[in-house]
Amino acid sequence: AIVLNQSPSSIVASQGEKVTITCRASSSISSNYLHWYQQKPGAFPKLVIYSTSYRASGIPSRFSGSGSGTSYSFTISRVEAEDVATYYCQQGSSNPLTFGSGTKLEIK
Amino acid sequence: QMQLQESGPGLVKPTQSLFLTCSVTGFSITSGYYWIWIRQSQGKHLEWMGYMTYSGETFYNPSLKSPISITRETSKNQFFLQLNSVTTEDTAMYYCAGDNSGYWYFDFWGPGTMVTVSS
Image (cartoon, rainbow over all chains, first blue to last red):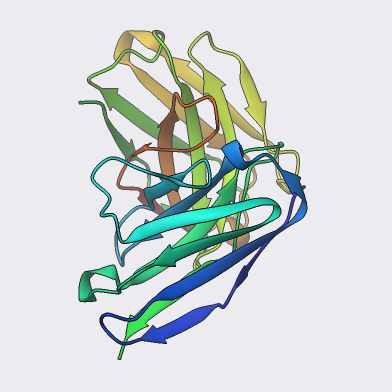
């Protein structure tokens, strides 16, 4: 199984700050198959970015993604209070599909 | 708009079987999509369990410690997850989801149903 190593495990940021989360895969993944989710407390994971860099429907432009091969990143250009959540990467390149361990974002 | 809703027993004793239902509205489960089960443990780890295609084929996560079964009832537009001989490690929030992307991302989720395995 492809292991996704996410870092950092937690971030504390100020509103307006830029934050970046990294997801490193144990094997190379096609960029079409790397996705990011946002999970707020008590809710299901919500798709934010699909296929590395495409924003899902209704997602603000401050969210972006990039990467290739084994290294991918997720960025919030200017963090807002409503972005408090845990963020997960997920690969669909090979079975079993796997998720990263999550990055918890908090606001100062 | 397609919607999914999980339902289940809430509390199950160790060694018993667990049976969960995902009810789909707004789309026929035989018309398309892959129908998926995902669980999230108390430690927040997300685990993909398996899927059923719109034609009824199934694929399960080979990394799961215990075997599972995904079945469906097309007349009710429902699909199911069964785990046998559950242990405390099966305590989790269970989500059903739908995928039609071709790239294995999940844009339709149910709200989840919590299952606790305890004597």
